[in-house]
Amino acid sequence: MKNPFETEERRAFRDAVRRFVATEVTPYAAAWDEAGEVPWELHQKVGALGVWGFGVSEKYGGLGFRDQFMSSAFSEEFAKCGAGGVGAAIGGRSISIGPIERFASEEIGMKWLPDIVAGRKSSSLAITEPTGGSDVANLQTTAKRDGNHWVINGCKTFITGGMKASVYVVGARTGDKGLKGISLFFVEADAPGFSRTALDRKMGWWASDTATLHFDNVRVPAENLLGEENRGFLSIMNNFNYERLGMVAGMLGMMKVCLEESIAWARERETFGQKLIEHQVIRHKMANMSARIDQIECYLNWICWQANEGEVPVAEVSKAKFSASKALEFCASEAMQIIGGAAYLRGNRVERIYREVKVNAIGGGSEEIMRDLAARQMGL
Image 1 (tube, helix red, strand yellow):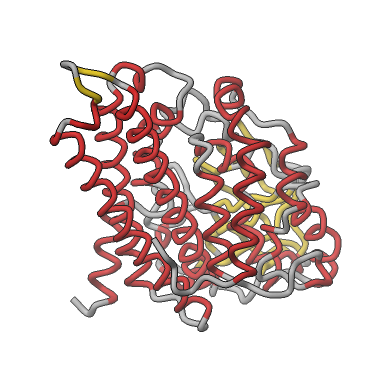
Image 2 (cartoon, helix red, strand yellow):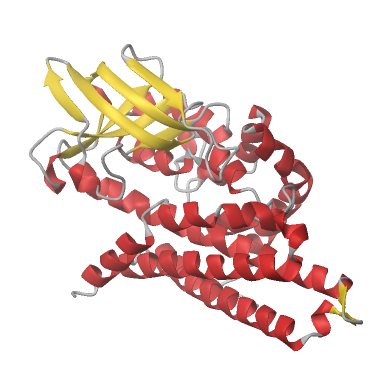
């Protein structure tokens, strides 16, 4: 489908990412998924594409500009490898770079961001806790001022990229209950009192190093407070908007894979003396899949345009997120039905995508939370 916002630069960037994924990722995605990790050199190869430099100052190794169309193109094309865990393993840093770039001291930024943006080091965002995920206002982890330090106590879980991150952006309660008592902190992985344990045996995202983080009287310098004290909630919410847009783009890429694999299979498979694609019921399934893909792609392009104009529409991002997860659920299920037993065997993209439908419906804000957030933004 033609994108009216396409430019030569955006097309060239997408083509470069597509070629990279086809040669450097897709052939190995199944093996990495089974192994439960990706080689660290992949981080550096992706870093060389510049994808983590959007919105980051050139002095920190960034590109000095943000283009949401390019960011979304990367998420979409990378997701076509069919292993969301591979993307999560390398991309966990993407939702923590922004707070570091905007709120950390120049000393911290100069020390860490060039390596993070280039893929030599990694960072993670630590918000979700065992007692709640989407309910950010109910954070239980605490940070108390003690002279020239903050002392952090608590636990975080389901932290993407958490086992291999060198640094973390940590949300902690510094004030009263509710939205106005939350702050963000920069914490290094070698800080005394900090530990982490791996979460394995997951339904999907096998290649992603997902962790539970433990903070036992972790002391960080006072200057490691990111932004204003008790004002971290707004920063977290702004960060979530870009994370959700990335997830929408990734789901769009997976939906396209489901359709492409279905068409390719149906053109070769014969049933009852006909090619599978010659059966009307199969063609109707494909038409329905294609319609949902077009709807999500149009919605995403419109939101990307607004983001580039300086406004990230919260209601639309929320609606796009839950709409995309339901559309992905539909397309993955239809692809499984069309391909049949071959799609049920591990090692193919549709099987991996089908397993990872639910993490997209939950992660970054569940479908229920997204609907409620959209309704509240609408004044309901």
